[in-house]
Length: 466
Image 1 (tube, rainbow, N blue to C red):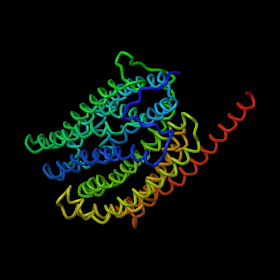
Image 2 (image 1 turned 180 degrees about the vertical axis):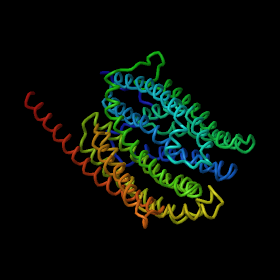
Image 3 (image 1 turned 60 degrees about the vertical axis):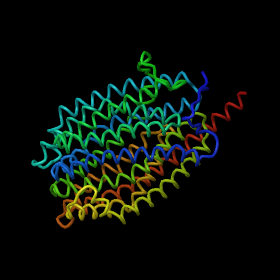
Image 4 (image 1 turned 135 degrees about the vertical axis):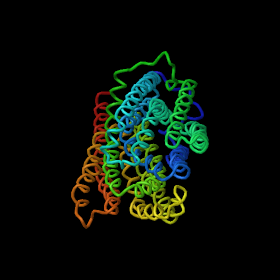
């Protein structure tokens, strides 16, 4: 074992010192990254909504759930990358960290190519199965196919960013996003307003800027020191590290995909109500996601902090990380949700000048956003579980609490004539968050007690032998 002794100013040792200041130091740039990423993605909807019309806005919105479904399964593996790399870094093992780095980049390229093929081949048929309205189907298909051309670049960027998060670096991904996101907005305006390319324009600009992001992240990793450094000639798959990444990342990806599957089903139910409701939901989702991605930064911090401390088996600190993470996510969620509910009409007017779209979007937000902090609590429990190496239990809990419950709700309650309304669909979100949050909390404390007890037994036996 070689020591990680080439620490850069971007790295954070999460195993010593006060937790809250370091967690905030890690999470705040990540919050900014998530919010900027959301704003840049929302720029697609803003530009097409204002300059290409309601049909184009609805066409982009109709693809969101599908894009998330396909990408989340594979991008969940980046969670495995983050946890495995964090453990190696926490244990100060350069050799295994290098193996993790090069295995991660290699499989990210393979995954990206697979995702591109799925998007190009199956776009139209899948959108038809999702009951996408015929009047916007051609636009949705065009947007989706072009968008998926940039999938390889997107997976490389996300896996690379997961490696940087594992060593505590959330600042440089923020810088890269500012560069690529700023370019994305400029290209959106150029392609849509001046070249009149509509949805094809915003999809093309996304693919171009994703490629730039991937180039920046690889350049960054190639200039790092120690085991995290990317050296192209070392690209290879280490079976042991791949197994560890898959063991944690695949269930995480399945869990994220379950959310997406349920959202695809919900989107199919929303599509029944026509393009105006689709446009309203598209606009409101962009605003709602500000709450989610802010809280998600705390979840990612908890995952990385827990992973590093698992490397040195510091269970007391792991529990403190969870408690501090929960307090942070509750405060963050309540504050931002309150602001969004109060200013919902004004925020929605950014995306559309239609009074009907704004009214429908405002009604949705009042149902969805009020208890959004419970979704954040659920995510922090999941982050702690993944950081401890347990990824199957939270997946099972999500399968029951999120996916299964939503399918049952839409198949039963929603089918009753008196409840066959858009409000019945919106109520699904807070109900399933609360149920799943409780289940994830039970899983976290059960796994924590088990791992701590096994570690105590191991230490006792070690003392007896010595």
